[in-house]
Amino acid sequence: MQAVAPRIASHLILASSSPRRRELLAQIGVVPAEVVAPEIDETPRAEETPREYVRRIARTKAERSGAVTPPPGHALLACDTTVALGRRILGKPTDRADAARMLALLSGRRHHVWSAVVLRRPDGSLSERLVDSTVAFCRLTDAQSSTYLDTGEWQGKAGGYAVQGHAAAFVRFISGSYSNVVGLPLFETAQLLRSCGLLA
Image (cartoon, rainbow, N blue to C red):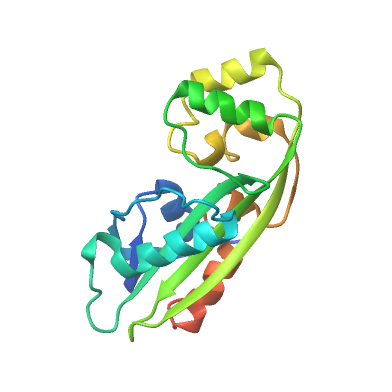
């Protein structure tokens, strides 16, 4: 089977500082014409559910990413992903100790990975997809956690882990979209891009 050759989507701006999202888009043959880093406060609000949180953050990225105003005829794609235990939001660890705390919480348990993908169309209207995947971790030993933390892979990762990396050895099963757990649900993203004529 021949791989899809990525092509530059000349009318698409990606609002994300994540290299993983660019790599995932390339898997479906899309290379954004421009990438901007969102400059927003991602602090969860009191009593905000994970579903509400990712929707708000993704919409804010789409509406105010780096104060970018897409040129006429351009669309802007934004996404936010978070890890959640019940209503508890596990964002990006602040340091190794925080990452260790998150791994201890996830050990031997199921958790959810929520993503909201928002496309700001050329006319300024927003289209959105919300995705929820369930991930089950095995029970981690102290040695496993310590070895993983030593890799540094937890840095900048929601929940303190990257499923596409060393943490794959901890995952008993995933129910739902794997690419969502990595950081961008590709099926739903492709739907949005097709609806705007940015993907065949």
